[in-house]
Image 1 (spheres, rainbow, N blue to C red):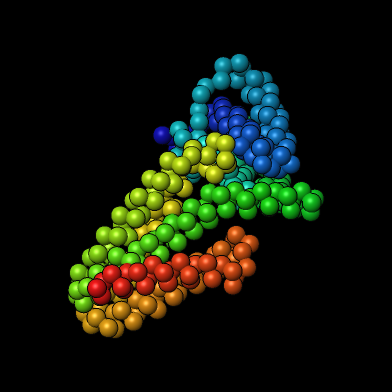
Image 2 (image 1 turned 90 degrees about the horizontal axis):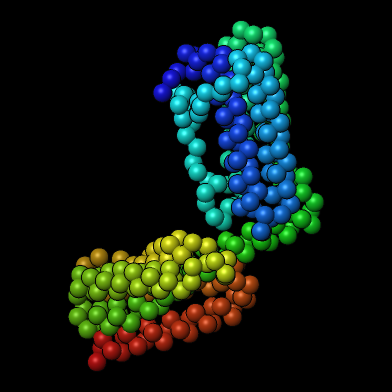
Length: 317
């Protein structure tokens, strides 16, 4: 890698041209990734990509007049001081807020590069162009920051609704399924072991095994259910991980109290944890699934109580 201070004017211009071409490709990728769900925002990124091409042509004209047709390949990763960018444009689906924040940071970095390059340039025409491009990138940064404000309320509401639906499909639904399964299905083996042995450590091990086993099972079940290409539910690995982790957490919640050596204290605390878990599940269903709280609570509590009672009866027999 080469230090920025050691670059010649030719290398600075070549780097600027390479950066503009890369930024254009990034904005095109943003637009392509957002277009199916957010066509209006995608159109704005198309416009920003076209402006980057205009900047590239301006730089290329000055370069040819000064240094000829040969353009050395110099990229930002070849120069010290540039921040390595996360390949967010490779992720699908793209999130609106993540893309806007990325674009704002990208334009801020580019504007700083142009200002610093202008200070080091000796040629007046090059210095003037770099200064003008710095001002243009500042405007792009503000545009990226205010991108959502340019949309009409109706369009923004529609895009927010789409984003909410994507979030629901990719995270809330698999997470809720995992939390319900982990919180409810592990009740029977845990309390059966508790009332059969009255041994807190053995009960904890049973609960731990049930939680981890259920998490692994649910993770694979969710990941293999579909690849997300038709349902829009996103990457199966992400969904599987969310579902598996939430399943394990749901099962571990009421197993952890049995780390307490006193059986009746541990059991009373486990009862309280189960009540909290069922309340949280009911709240999530109300918040994200548009289910009335009492209706959600009734469904969850009835299922939880039946499994809970089954575990106690089996363990006490």
